[in-house]
Image (tube, rainbow, N blue to C red; front, side, top):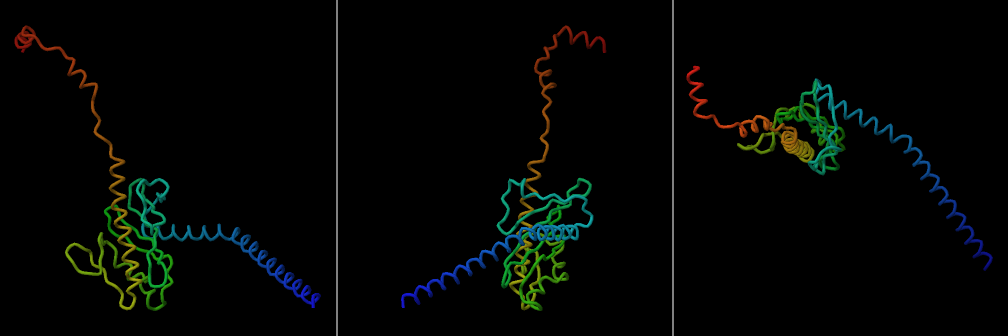
Length: 230
């Protein structure tokens, strides 16, 4: 009996050791694969985002990410904001963000003009129900937001810009709506901050001021002389 117990324990130990070895091997292989594939994935994602920016601002000649230089705190659902220029002139911003849909987050790029209106929207990823929720990612629907300004609402009112929700895709439609409002509100604050920080104060001419203060008074004799010369 004791020999059988020892043999059984040894078998269990051997099987456990093999399973641990297989698990470690798989983990190492996954880490190595990720090491080589992650840069490719990041590069493809970056290329897709740059392509989205160029679609929203076809005339752009310069795209500058701002997240590392901002003093303004970005909203939690925004991962990056790009300033878009043409020959040094600001065209607007592209906001790379996400908003909760029906089953998962909807990733999108929202273009906002320098006048704080929507220039366009590109959905980068959506996993909601095909044929229903994913209808909110159709370009015809996204284009209905163009030229709208903050705030945008599904309701009608004097103080809001109206957008339509897609029947049967309320959650997905609201994800787009929320992403647009987040982008518009943030870019409005961003534009105000940049104006405040880039405005040149009116220079004070201290040299002329000093001369005026130290200039000696004109005597009565000098005044009479000047009048006679005239």
